[in-house]
Length: 391
View 1 (cartoon, rainbow, N blue to C red):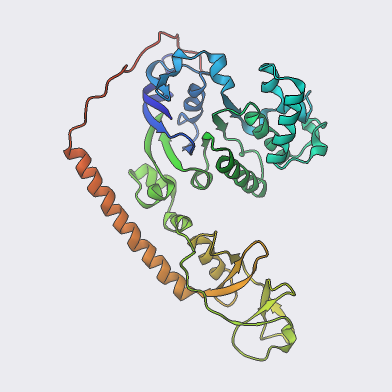
View 2 (tube, rainbow, N blue to C red):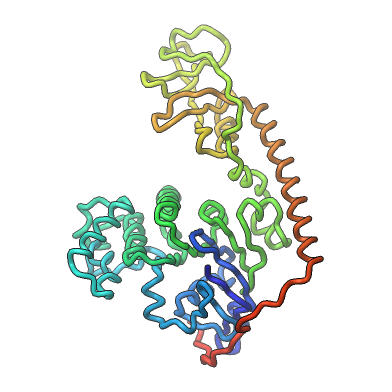
């Protein structure tokens, strides 16, 4: 666990970049700090590995003040991933990944094995090992950056807007990659971004910053459902209810059947008919206006893994108003859900949220009523570091 306790960071006489910031970053989870440009996100991240030092307050890692740990030791136990990968242009992919293990004087066989392992984990073809960064796509460069950040098997991975320089399709793939790596490797990840959708998708905990302070922190579903301030409400936007459906599982939806065919030209009924391929996968709807023709399928959803938001989008994109459900890796047809049934599920979800809000309010009332026990240990400190010039 990493804990900020009343931390302030100023540059000269300017207003503090970070002001009286307190935040608990849980271990083995992903915390995403999000906010507009200039709110203090990068300053906060760089204080975790002591690239910057606070002027006041204290940062602790598993109870130990960071300023009692050597900077070199600390940084080698924390991976760091930045925009565009931050790769050394004169080093090959393999040499870039091996940067920190070489600094730690690993033997060549161990380094080579680790490079191969990380290239496989980050889905980089082995054929890229001897290429230079300029010979890679933006997405490949960022994957190398992630691999390099994980090379020495750090406990903590810091990510400074790592996906901001790639297109939306590549970004979604990289987000899925990092989420999968976190589940597999059980790392503590601290990431900063200005993209709220990215924060919601990536974070177990989301912390929203404004003017150097945390204005709200918590699970993304809770922040979407109950924004704490007008700024948070405005920052989230008007579609927060729809975004919140991304945290409601589609597993409980009632699936019904429709007529299906593998030969669109043979369908004669006026009811919606779903066209399946030879493997039982949905490919479109029979077009009643055009003999033998088909209409676009729309999107599909998997009840076992997808959210209510994905299911609702599948119904809205369907030309017949039915969300098509698929099952398993083969994505075979499993049934459909009508818009009416989806709206019923949405109403049930909203009722559940209202109940959760009431429970949180009750817990807050109890917390205010019960006096807090005094906390022992060092308070905020000023280490006497001369403020650095703002760059």
